[in-house]
Amino acid sequence: MTEKLQPTSLTVVHMQQILTAAGGRPVTEEMIQKDIEAGAPVNPDGTINLIHYAAWLAKQMACGI
Image: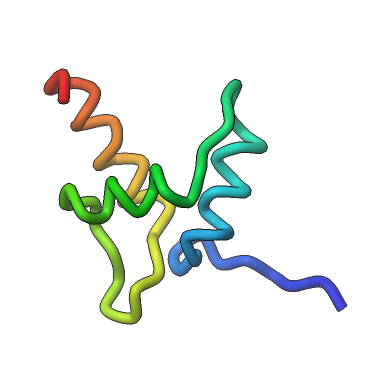
């Protein structure tokens, strides 16, 4: 059975896999966890919304953080 991922509620592991597959460089679970500790948005259940996280990352890049 194939697991269907919901882009609005991804685990750190799933987010890492998606970003690594989509990007030109590896993304680690530790990198995502550090982002969360730095204020990246998470859902009340601890999952991550891909769109909200991508917007947060874009804002961080625009601010030079």
